[in-house]
Each structure stands twice: as C-alpha cells, then as structure tokens.
Amino acid sequence: MKWIALGVALAVQLAGVAAAQACTGQTGNVIFQDNFADDTGGWDFDPPTSQVTPPAFVFNLGKTYTITSAENLTFNATLGDYCMDFVLPKSPAADNTAAVGMIIWATDYNNYMLVVAFSNGNVGMYKKSAGNFTTLFTVLNSPAFNAAQDAVNSLRVVATPDQKLTVTLNGQAVKAIRAQVPTGPQLFGLFGQLDKALPADIAIKVTNFSVTSGG
Image 1 (cartoon, rainbow, N blue to C red):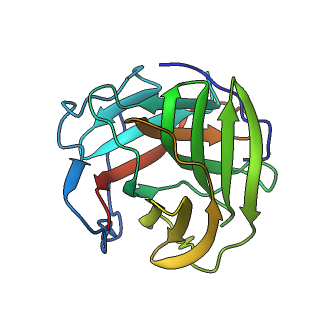
Image 2: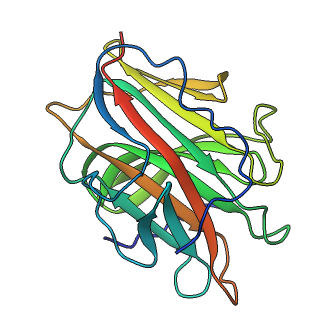
C-alpha cells in the first residue's frame, strides 16, 4: 500500500444497500472480475485502512488517514472496459466530500490515470506522473449520480485503440478525452479519499470491480 496526496478538492458490513448496478453493459472477454466474496483477488491491502470485508472492498478513512489507494498485483490490462460499483457515504460536511476512484494505466503508485466520483456528484479525471497530479477534467454535479443513502453507483471508463477514454456514471455519459495509450500491460486499482480528517473513520465501499477486453 502506498499513500498518495491528490492536490484537488477531491471491519464494516453492507446493510440495507440498494441493488447493485453490477457493471452492466461491458463488452468483450472478461480479464478480471471481483465481487469481494473473499480476499483472493490480488489486491494490495493495508488493513484496516484498506481491506476486503465481504461483500465489499472497504476504505476506512477519516481518523488516521484521509487518502489511500490499492493496486491489483496479479492482473494487468491496458485497452479495455473498466467498471466498478461503489457506495459512498454522505458528505460529512459541505467542505468535506468523500470520493472513490478507479486507477488505470498504472506503472506504479506514482504514475497512472485516475477517474474519481465524489459524494457531491462531481466526476473528475486526473493524470499522476512522477508523483504529481494534473487535472484533465472535472464535471460538476453529474445528474447521473444517485445521492440516496447507501445507493450503489456504477463508474465506468472504456479505453479504446483510437486513443480515447470514455467515462460514464450509471450508464450516462460524463465525458470522453483523448489520451496516449501506454505500451504493454498496465496495473489497475482503487482509490479512496476524504477532504478532511474526522474523529472516527467512515467507510467507502466498492462492491464490484471488473475489466473486460472491450470492443
């Protein structure tokens, strides 16, 4: 586990959670799929801050850490259809949003692309290079975001050979951007963040993560 800082305003059980989106609509052959029934998925854990607590991957953030990430150590992908279902807590305060993200095209914890959904409905994409972040876009108050308590939202990014990354939230288009496709298979992963510390941890949950070949 490596700790990171994003310079932009970016053991828990699931109970009464709305029906999962289940990453519907993905195309191509399955490269990787994890519904977190156990901890055999190859993720880089740092309990209790990041761990699998079936049936979810859980980031416990607020008291000790406000930001972290976990990459998958045993599977790789580059072009493809990446999707995750997640449950974000309500924003602890107007100036303290929770966020969850999907890492793609990672060579390590200092170099990757990141798509993030925030508890206020914002969606952003960032590029981390040599440990430094660049904001590629921010879409404010996406109407696709389901802000209901314990709602399951689905974030997806499709990387295609025409050098395009297309982001959708709950099946609705957010934004597409062109990006240079790296050579060779890359790492992918998960990201969690709070803007500010809290007196006690709150849970950010990923209930499903899948990668297909797309096309």
